[in-house]
Image 1: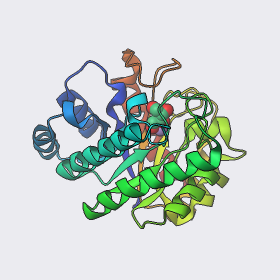
Image 2: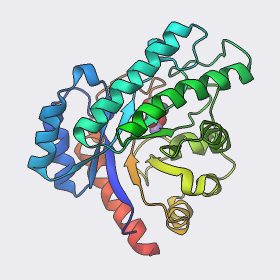
Image 3: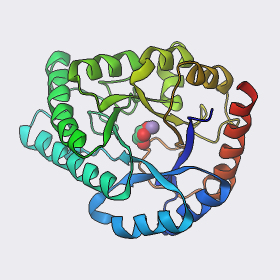
Length: 276
Ligand code: LER
Ligand code: MN
């Protein structure tokens, strides 16, 4: 338990100044803040100053994958643009002290491939390796996140993330698992986390409906036990999102600000205290 830290993805805090989110999470007892990967629209110097003022750290960057940032586009210039975007996220992460960046090779909600799987996986490995080498030089990790079938077609389960990570073979490129996606795609969520083992670098938690844990039907107890059992030492970042198909839609729903932020940290602390 001592080695697991808690954070909250500010993606859901749409429409408010980032200071409010940082202050809220520090006040509720989170260890870290997960930031949206929009380096060109974000003032890293101000964020660093706010993190120090509220005595909380940056856990991670949630990168945003659009058709212009598609690491497996059939157009080489788009793949290059996507790698350049990831490198910008690395600079942003380094500037604010965030340890990792989430990576999914396809644009979000792209559900059809443009080439055969072997070719797309080769492009994925090439793109992520190039960004991963740059990230490694800057002390940042890349974490390959499987998304459910409605958000992408290429990496849906942990075994696929692990195969890609193994192929890339860089010490700073690992896997991550988001309980919301895993609830849709994995046979058993805890088993999938265990499969990643020491290559599990980051975790997203949300309940089955993407609300706060306890508001859906995922049983988090065996998951928490497994994370402790495999000696997971990273962050669990809450990634709660409103019930709309497009996760980057930016809808504002009141419960996801104070109420779910507080509920989630209370739930996690109680859960992990009960098993250790
Ligand atoms: C990102 O972490 C994620 O899980 C996707 O569903 C896009 O938000
Ligand atoms: Mn996620």
